[in-house]
Length: 365
Image 1: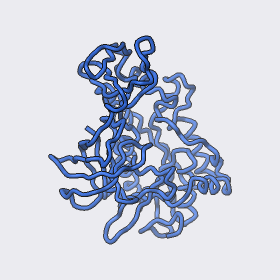
Image 2: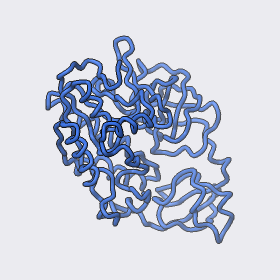
Image 3: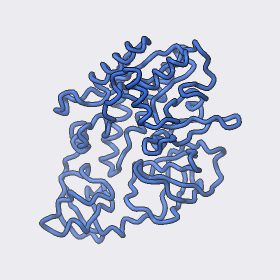
Image 4: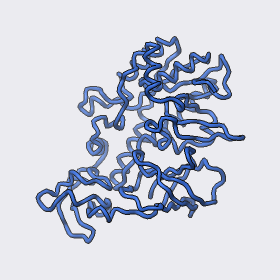
């Protein structure tokens, strides 16, 4: 298919494009318009917490991004609407983020946002508008194989976002389209500049939208808890120091442990977080090694459930997929690594791949 062409859609068909105000979704909208579809841009106001965070309104999904999306829509001559989903976002994403950290986990709110808002609420809204498709600027590929649709990595692996979309269901894939999956990010920016969209050089978001400064612990404290002091202990239970709240730590963390007066911090890593005891457990790197994980709440796109096999798995968005075997177990999945992995944390996702294809994934327990 041509760039911007949507399977099953014909010229004149109505499509909804989720426009965040960034270059990717802006180009997705422009590509659809060039293919002759009736494009309606929808921007979700999810979190306008810049003032609350003392950041002068610099948070993603806030007023500045809405204005950018509106200007692009005006440039393209397409309809544009802003939907206030802030209460849904707070309940389904922020509250879950806070509770997860207080359980000693390391959450991924971008996946929750896709699950709870973008590929659920926005999808239903798009259908209510009579749209033939929901289009986003994600860097993934939707591939028709036989009678079904598969989710594949983007051509530009440095920008690939398939890890964050593992929870997209088969029914959602039938309706959603990702026209940037076959483009390099550099080409996307070139396209935006050539068409004068005004966001060609806009910086990508690097942090969670409701924590644009990267201080996740501050968000936890502002939105419901944290700040409870406790012990930092080694694997044998010996107290090594004190912490100011378990929300300040994540498995695999080496720096900022606050043990400078007690020991050499460079030789200690966070091994686990015991929320029940309010303890942070530290130790040498070799104790971080994990041979297998269990996943819950599986979303499986790889065919029939129940059969195990060999695959590759990612347990963090920034890591490369590593070889593994998998088997279904008690409604979830057991994944065994070929080589031990380090820094595996509860609350992150385990996403399985067969080559470029996403087989599915679940949450690490």
